[in-house]
Length: 417
Image 1 (cartoon, rainbow, N blue to C red):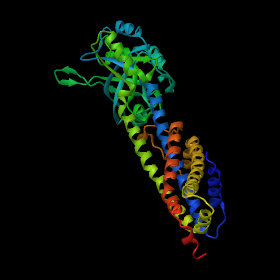
Image 2 (cartoon, rainbow, N blue to C red):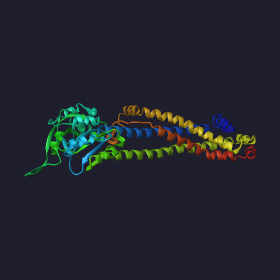
Image 3 (cartoon, helix red, strand yellow):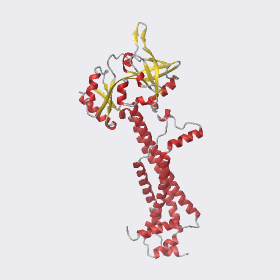
């Protein structure tokens, strides 16, 4: 730091804090800092919500979805026990579970809905995921072979107006050929529990039953649709399942959780980028207010600036004085906005619930947002990016007023004083 730096800082703080008869100038300075604080707080909260939505969505998807899957390309996997045993021996594979998956139609009284039927082995399912933890009013153990019981997603059960212990009728897509034509295969199933994962898209469309019951219903014999894999690193699931398929000799269609739900995460990333740009405009508007405030300050302090110039203060030092003032205003707003934004983001769920109780309405509909509550996760990298953006914009906003101050001619400014 140069010897003149402390002088520039003291002058900047003196100009910024000195009382003035111009109350509008003081109010304008307050508005500048408040504008920056508002923009920063809003940006932190919005980005925290986007981060929380992504994290919550990922966690809930992984709770009810396998990390990766192997399915037959043209037909079901017939010798699945041997394939599963070989797959379990592959590197990074922690567990393997067979499953059957097909579309169906369920009905209860006059209510009808399409459904994704999934047949599982309860013991194997517990090894690959935490679906059992989301079953309410029952358990996976109720899905015994031959019982023809089913677990319905809570939202699907509400759509069908059916409860635990009641029965539904399931129609398989491929019917039975008779002299009278093709007759759909129907089976009455008892609802043994509800699945409440908090992920509306899943809870609205899934019906889970025993693997053997599903095989009989869809006439697969001893075959299964595919094998679900649990791996040691879900974020490398795509690479791991590819290596597993190669190790098994190929001939399988592979997929993973990130590919199945790629549109969700791509949309979140795109929205987050757009929101960052749009909210940066709010801070940019506050930066324009800093320009206007400093220009008025330069005009008011013309005499003081002229005196400082006659005492030997260089134009470069004057530029530093007014740049420090603008950066100080931006920093004050930045600190206040960061405190407000982080505090609100950490208590956002409680704030939303309180507002819903006050208004007597739901502000966060799971049918629209796929989640039943508003999550929030503050990212250090996002906060750091906001800090850098605010400091850069504050510094840029000071350039024109500082240039105007540096061009002040002492004789011209003092002529009428």
